[in-house]
Image 1 (cartoon, rainbow, N blue to C red):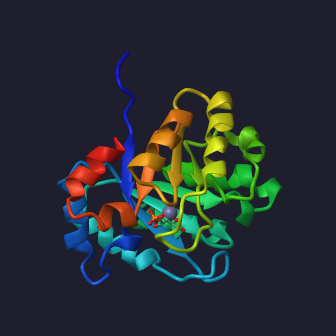
Image 2 (image 1 turned 135 degrees about the vertical axis):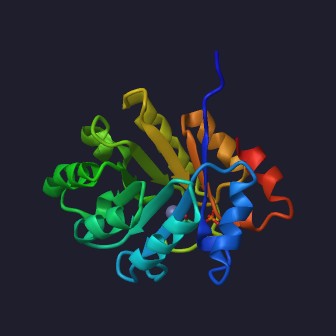
Image 3 (image 1 turned 180 degrees about the vertical axis):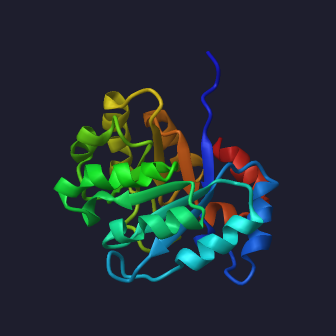
Length: 216
Ligand code: DX5
Ligand code: ZN
């Protein structure tokens, strides 16, 4: 059996915001696959981070796919600006959208020729995603409450991965985000995750290459 590809997406939330280009190059040269961009609006989550203009600038300095995680209310309003600014994967939160609007939102994201992802917070049950597994490209299972980097992994959230994997088409990407390191990443991969986001583990490492390798 060939080894399954694991997509490593370093979160620039733990990078130096005054040196984003330098810090993205650091992970590009060390075996990462994507760049994870955490967009927070101060409403859906208590924190405020970065938005469309930063994504636009990052697009010019990296060839890596931009994996944009929207932790915002009204994601529908921002699909077009983020897609046109260079997001390659656009993930919104299930909790931020009315159930009746979810299919349209996924369709809208895909209409820009990019990948659509849907994410659930720790308290949201995985079954709510079952109706969408055939139409999204990625599911993001949060293993911390979204809002901040450097929090501890919630192991009970990881079990949701199993439910999703069991019901998913073969090519669905299942990503985890929050408190991921070599140990917690392994737990998630064993449950069926094939993309790991890591911020503090990667950017806090003395040896970034080793840290990324340890996640694969
Ligand atoms: C948290 C963000 C994460 C964050 C992860 O709300 O979505 O992407 O950067 O940080 P670590 O890996 O430090 O838990
Ligand atoms: Zn994230």
